[in-house]
Image (cartoon, rainbow, N blue to C red; front, side):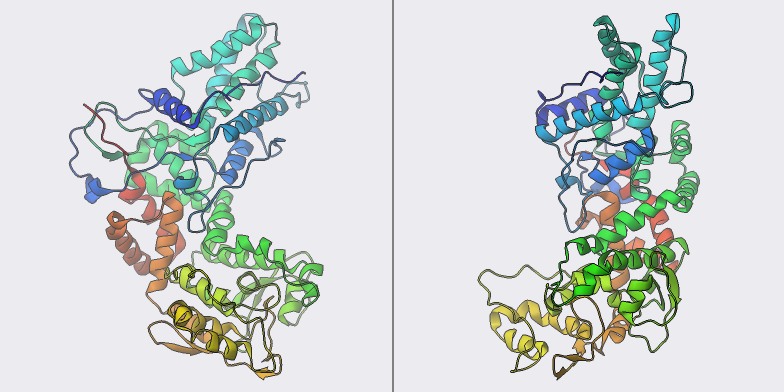
Length: 555
């Protein structure tokens, strides 16, 4: 079969695309007119405005696979998404350019061409689900467009939308194309549409109400991309279609069902890896001369897997997520076990759960190789990076960026003293002490771990002093005492809530969110700091279930 006709979208500008989104959605998927804004339920009248959000690269790939099967691929290389506070699903950076739009159009052509290739035993493509011979052609084409469009656009298509898609199929047939090729034109249009590429949420027409509930399909979409990084399944779409998703009990029931599904692993792959920034481990490049085992034993991927498996156990086991800080267990393969000095027999490729003894130097995420190697330089550990990571990712007390023209940090132990002693001399400079005074005393607790996270008793020929303090003066000695101190800090659960909120809403919290954040943190504590319970409570919150328009609608 020859390639399907490409849908040309290159003439659309970014603003033109947004206009198409709004024009195409009005009257199709909007809320009924509402009364004048009453402030919203539960004080939601002051919720921050929501930006139109494109699917990020991960969400796009997952959605395509759900639609077309696990083997669905495209030759188009989509660029990496920008990040805000470590997250690539923030609406601020998920706009679209004409070049990216053209890539999506070409990707749609690749995907549809592959999907319409004969795969079944009878030589029919998987998408050809009805008899299209003779008089059946028109109803079959409309049926396929309607069914495929419902899954792709995450809501039912209107009769007018199906008609407009079918018109493109007719035009292709009139040009002499086969049914499969002509149908492909319509399917391409679905995959290149703003309704597919964006998570469309429509403001009520002809209404003075600025803050309003999402409709059930919009809410289902928010839920699925939070919990699965992918589209709603048929069960969720069916609940949305009968509008029972607006009921609190049904909303909670669906959330718990989705959390129990294997697709909830996306919370590990996408939320946890961005919160903890373990995705950045792939960029670590320890010196091969100083640390030859890092690359030869593929320690980097093993370290990332270790952290993911520990987080996954706490999530799926419905345990306190705060145990991540001082967990008495971990997962290792043979290479990582050797790196950590653990005794026993381990497989080269399979990971084994091990219980850590009280005497172990490994206990909790602060001693994971992923965190330690990621927060290092190619030649040495980094007190600054490690302290900054603890403050920013666990306590949400991100230090300000360094000023320009600051002096270079020391590179390692010398004849004049250990790295710690040189760091302390370095930060005595008033230009440096403001920030380093909060970061370095935390990083000092991790001095026993080198640039790739291996335990060491000395720094060169110098004894290691692993004593440190938090900014409020609480002291500790070594990684395990630091972990215990951080776990008891009320800023930790509040920070976890803030990180989950940021990921779930695709935006950073604002002043109007503080009351909800406080309520979520209180509930998080009452429910044993279990991540599942936090996610359920968040989905039920006004911030998650409602939308605020960027501009007031005109009467």
